[in-house]
Image (cartoon, one colour):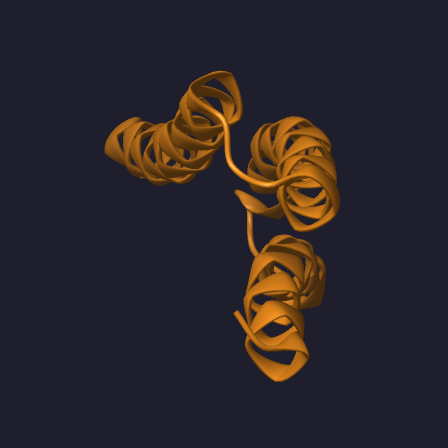
Length: 101
């Protein structure tokens, strides 16, 4: 894999941080009765999401330095699954919040 490809993948991983920040920005810009509740829900999820992305970026760096291993690939799959689960959890919690109207 070329260095350009490696950098692209790494930058793609880092885009999850942008996604997390965008979630917080959107809620902070809103001014309605659910803004505070949304922020509480999203900030907790974003904190977990950022930790998972940190782990994923370190796992990717390990692949670049040491090559692939089954254990490392398992960790990466778990991290990606955790990211998907956190995003879905955020969506569901916000939908439940609006369902309480």
